Amino acid sequence: MRRAVFFIVAVIGLVLALPWHKYLAIREITVEGGERIQAETVLQSLPITVGMNWLTADTQAARAALLRLPDVRDARIKKRLWAQIEIRVHEREPLILARLGQKLFWVDTEGFLYAPSQGGFGPILVEPQTVETERGRRLAELFYLVPLKALMTSPGNLLNSITAIRFEGSTMILSLRDGPDVAVYIYDVRWELARLQRVLSALAGRHLRRIDLRFERAVILQAHP
Image (cartoon, rainbow, N blue to C red; front, side, top):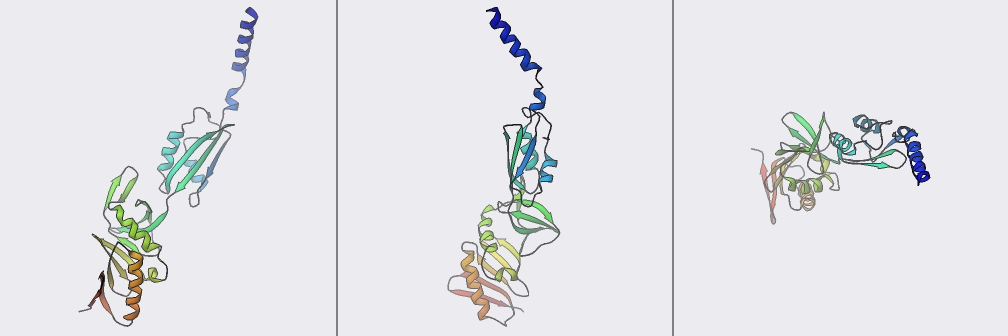
């Protein structure tokens, strides 16, 4: 019995004497999934660094820190064996530029206004209604994302002629470069754009103020006064 107790005490003493702090120090932090976000930006934002204790590293606090980065939609942080930390970043997908007052912001595919912009290309969503959330400012009417995605992924060159987009209830108003404003319903944007191309082709050379495509069997034209 005494030998067994002595053996147990000896093992415990050996375990306590080992330099465990060296073996539990974080040896490597890997970052995956970022295309626009640099790995250096991710690492600089972390409250976890190489050399810290692997067991006590707070992955929840690290995730919260990454979610504060404008371009990060989501982040996953896992502890791996051999004192490693694995980070996978999910970036926001830019959808369209929005103008609020005199400022431009990128809007992602979830409706969040996540980053200011000095300029850009393509149509600009003008003065959309927004709300404040825990993750930042977001479009108030999320159902507008469906027609916006359909518009921004539409085939052909018509998109290059659209300079501004406004919403009025179930109507989307497209402002064409050096051309009329076009009113369409938001329910089938791709079909409406194909129809608009046919109308513009038929009206080539005419200078119009507005084209209304919200009627199935009629096109309402408004000329300049």
